[in-house]
Image 1 (cartoon, rainbow, N blue to C red):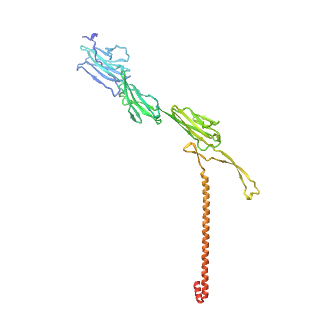
Image 2: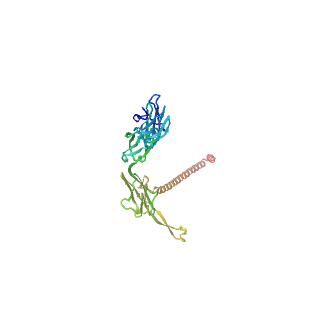
Image 3: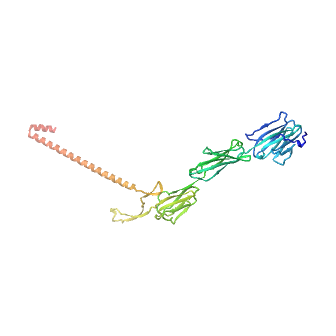
Length: 438
């Protein structure tokens, strides 16, 4: 048969050469005919959106007709002349040994076998298979329902399109969380999802979890989606008390510290069994009262709420009274005739015997001013001890002095008796007296 006869047009080999910069590039040489075969083709894989090079290597080419067809058996080029109006295909080389075309912006719809046909006395053909790899985009994280304190949250990581299917992993605190994986085919691509369920408390609010997608086309890299848990919980309220003691004329500033998710927007300040003072000013969570007086005493309440609960805290205000006392300074006795008594006003602070409880700044407990009484008691004890010591020493000295007197008196009587006895006995007496004198 002559090569010019269209009735003899049969599929001929096509060589597809798609250059890849991927480590997964596979180049397979297809040579199905014996050594005399006139056509060779190559299988290749290319990334979606890339450019493929399709090559037909010719042997013993004698100028016969060369036809290149796509997987749908549409003729792309006839002896180097464009036959299909698709600008993505370009003839870049046509020689007796090599015919090469390029395909830009490759999509999965371009996959399949490309035919290269050589018409000689014996028709030769070869088929090259084009494979398109689709790496996954960064996965998304979906939450089926709100996470509430004390409940569970269900998270789904979704990679909607990849080829071959992507591998998904959940990570929290550098540990993998096993998930339930499912796949769904979407034409030539695959949708992959992984679902986990986590128990949550308020401490988990803001905790980070990550979903990683890996794929052969990514060359060891990963597409990661980070997600922070959004745990809803009821508010907590704490009033920050002012430092020190408040006296008449001072200013009061109370701040209501609030936590919660969602954070309460409205904060309510009230005074139990009474209205707020006329000079009270509320600015967000802060209550301010200027020029305090004892009429402002009472228990102040801060309240806040959201969709998950309500909370409140109280603070008991005690304003200490300032009392002015006039004292009289009297002159000394030796100046009494020349000076008059003068008075000086002295302001004394009389504080009630109450003090705030350090464990609860809003509470008040009764205390006793033990320091002055302790000092007075110590002085009195020292004075009594001194008096007792003086009395003991005095008595001891008196007793000792009296005992010494009695001893000397008894000694005198003994000497007088001896002298009288010596006088009555004559010489013996003089000898006795001598002995006494000695």
